[in-house]
Length: 241
Image 1: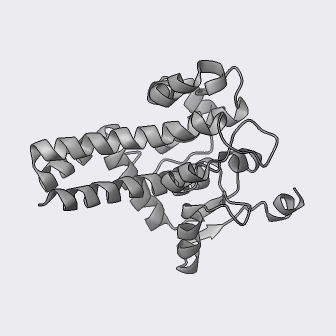
Image 2: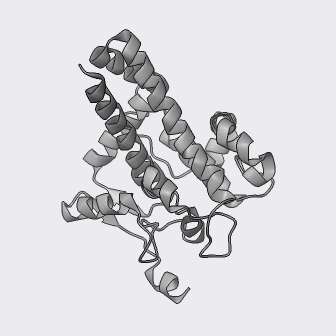
Image 3: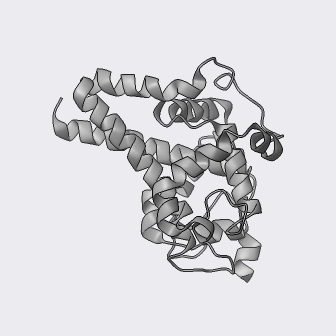
């Protein structure tokens, strides 16, 4: 396989991970802004388990705690508490220290209902299956390199939202998170973080005409196909603001 095709496939898997994170983990599981068809939920959960190693209940617990203590003491990964670059480069470790605390997970996700993937023994090591898939596709050396790129890029894209999008950028509303459109393009809309902190449960993160939320287009397509239903949108309040 040519290097060009390896790059295309690797970037394609990265984009799937990014879109599934914001649509499934963030907007559906954590905030309940939309409901996904069980098959779609399963496939998104499976992809994230294999290629990122993220466990939905843990992710949701840490993010809900972030909203409760946003940018003050108690926030799991605030750049105002820990520093911008510490969060950008160390967000993974801040996340891990919280998500592996059973008390945090129980407190913030009492509503979570495990599915068949959660109940599968060894699911938290699913990322090793992802490594094996990369190696089968590209050979062991190139596969390891592609897998490492995917994992590091995925972590840093998430880190950029938790760090840069809390200190640098524009604000439509009176909270410390910021909007950065170019980060939103790289993170399927997550860079519109000021909007999200104002309306956490909204399934759509773009509010103004010049803002673009890539994941919203996918959600609308899923709706048209009968594979998703949007439950929360802040239209009236946003227009008034």
